[in-house]
Length: 120
Image 1: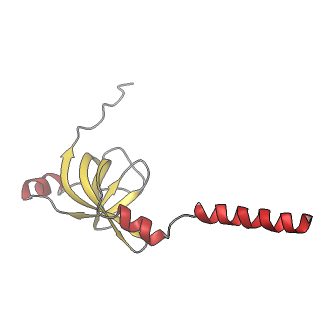
Image 2: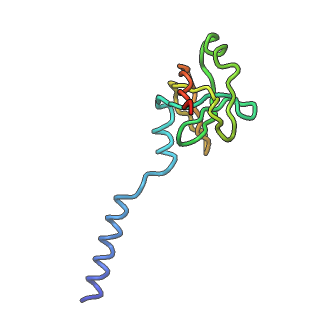
Image 3: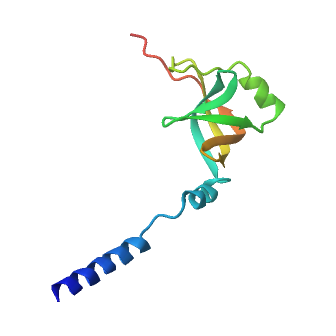
């Protein structure tokens, strides 16, 4: 009788775990891809390609901005290790997921003033 109770209990636990299972990663990626986000960080060219650095990561970027914005960011560069002289920006973007690659399609950029430096 204990063996049957143990089997029933384990089947119930397995069924409960199956109900809490995560959806396939492809479904999660599809639900995120195309979402609009507001990103804060630095924009610039890193190794010849446009990138955007946030406090969490560095994303490759596809620009969908006007000529005036392109002219404003044309000299922006990102260093692998931040030096504090990057182009600070707030960007409106769309998340693009292609396989394992997450990138941003930026359609609006607002450059921010450089943070104040401590005179001491």
